[in-house]
Amino acid sequence: MWGLDRALPIAPLIEPPANQAGWILLAIGATIIGMAVLEFRRANTTVDPTRPANARALVRSGIFGFSRNPMYLGMAVGLAGWALLLGSLGPWFVLPAFATLLTWLQIKPEEAVLATLFGRDYEDYCAHVGRWFGRRS
Image 1 (cartoon, rainbow, N blue to C red):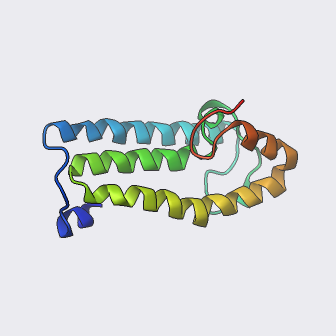
Image 2: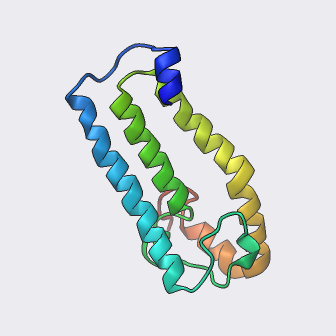
């Protein structure tokens, strides 16, 4: 984002001091990640997203009641904060690319493993909690 902002400065959007609100989003993103890590620790299961087969429990409590992927959500919120701090349009192009690539390269493969490990429980969870955010009836 920083490199894109410097190499291709496109349309300054948010000038100082308004861009400093990005720190709030960075803090929110870090908090979301921290909440997810705590829930994983409480469930005594892996935090390592590269080894979903090591999951010992399907975590549905806390922040996982609102997002199936709160660690990735926290990263996205943090990236939005960074884009806001940078203040121009260019860095905002990274956010949808990040979400799209992460969904296809990491989240979907994780979901396949979790569906195999936890079966119907995982299907029910997916039916009630959004991949990125949101509860469903």
